[in-house]
Image (cartoon, rainbow, N blue to C red; front, side, top):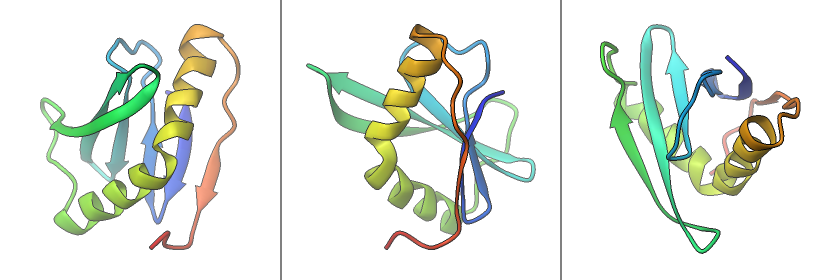
Length: 101
């Protein structure tokens, strides 16, 4: 499970055996949600949040924080996906402790 970010206590990561579409998971405690990236011509057109089967979703306040994070770091997440799953490179974990907005 490559951890890519921690944002205000929310762990943002990929599972090691991921599949397309490009997506990322966010977890706090036992609660989890995922964000799928709709990419058209190399640009993020939309980010869709989806429930993770068998998991309770993040709280509304954590979902809002995660959305804020995705707005700023969406392109970086896609690049980390490519580095890890396509180029098979190590990903550097980053901890962000200050609110972005």
